[in-house]
Length: 355
Image: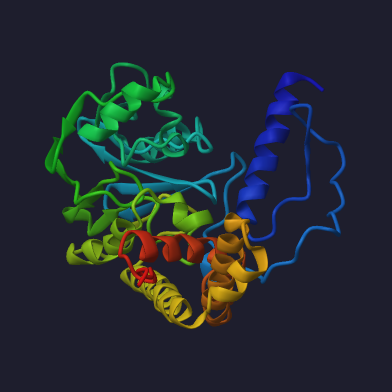
């Protein structure tokens, strides 16, 4: 197959895959190229609850992305799994994050919008939400002349990681920074660790929008281990901080649609329900049988005890949110274990003092 044909086929495949995020494409990639025929589903793989229709976003175009207007000259881009945003101005474009899965489609989306509005398509500024590669790995596509802005800890971590796809920010701040470009302003703030040590709040007051990545995911539960969060108490507190800002539109960095204030409140309830059930389970699951059973094998006793607490705490949450939040039956147990360990270790609940 000619190179151009392979490229077109691959773009079509990626577009189709992300467009039906709830029902992944059955096509496969073999040795870096698209397989000619779709593979059959493995019957050994587990079945999960259907994704609620309200959790899905808009259909993607042939290149595998969707670009839409948030408000006025603020736009968002998604591939169905990741999200970025950009602000068009009279002096150029401000880009917010650069996920590698969207990659070159970021510039395609910007070109599409700016061509329609007769504005410059040049990205002059790139704001980093935090240092993780899955949100910044396409940063290098925009060259060295772009001014990158991020938290001081983002710069420290990126210099440590020395990843050429994620150049360190040129402008940093500790707590607050206002970015002014082409008559527009964006307020950046750090309110302590949450998903990561450097994750920031990106507020566009003139566009009624807040961008907070990897915390509340509209229509979905967090992925493994509460979004692989670095600070569980900080993560659990972050939505309340987000809600202190005035905004209507919420950009979460993940999955297929924009969020609302109701989405953030629903996320809070979900996490609070897990925490409440964990506390109840810690108070009611007796650890004695597990330590009697495994004797000197302490880790086996600890594992089976914590698994039992996790299962008891997670079960009612899974039942309550299946059909409400997508993947409640997929990831709730792993997030429950993380919240359990935070309640035990960060908050000191469930620990027994030897008499």
